[in-house]
Image (tube, rainbow, N blue to C red; front, side, top):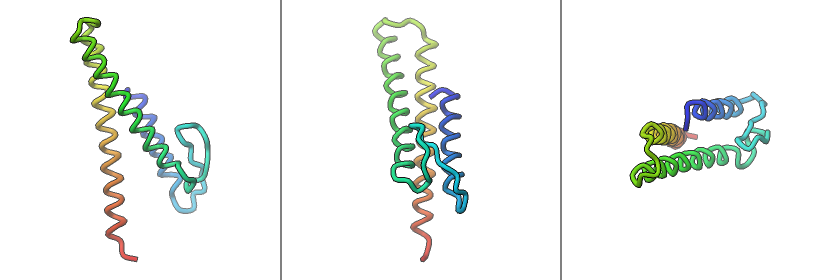
Length: 113
């Protein structure tokens, strides 16, 4: 994930947080471009699946770049390093999102009703 895509993903997370505030009433824009309420089914699930697909495609691209370099199809080391760094940044962002989701779930489980 390049820095521009990472900032776009972070912006989508910010929109999700803004839309879920009590009384905000602001629409939530999903990665597909459709707008709906924050409590619409699939909004958060679509966002998470988008991050999973993006992380996976970056990992596949990095593996492909490494394979091409090892077999001699590509002799540009910079492209290989860039693909690996891109995949690493994407994976780190995904892991941070996962950690925040788990922390939020654990916080909800500690609440007493």
